Length: 117
Image 1: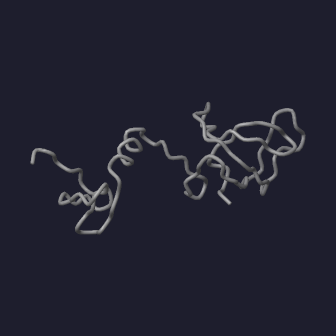
Image 2: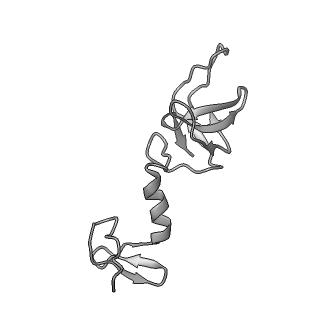
Image 3: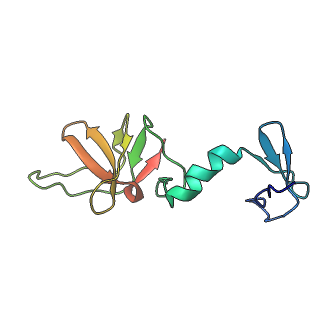
């Protein structure tokens, strides 16, 4: 048996074993798919989280948690504004959400100023 299995991502136990397509940890009973875990780990932070730590995905609805100034608009985006059907992108300067805000049109937002509904 020349293949070595990776340690458990939860407790770092080295005694993991295979059970069908999953790997299982005997100490903490954590089960995971090794093929799904490798791309996420190699991406280096490919997970986008909102201001309270919830994981965001394409198509989610979020709420703006603080008032935002918008160039060319005298009012800006108020806290509590709902934004539907977001898309996650690799934006410029930390703007990782591409969306359409009612009354303002298409724009990019930072995930640190939104909360998942």
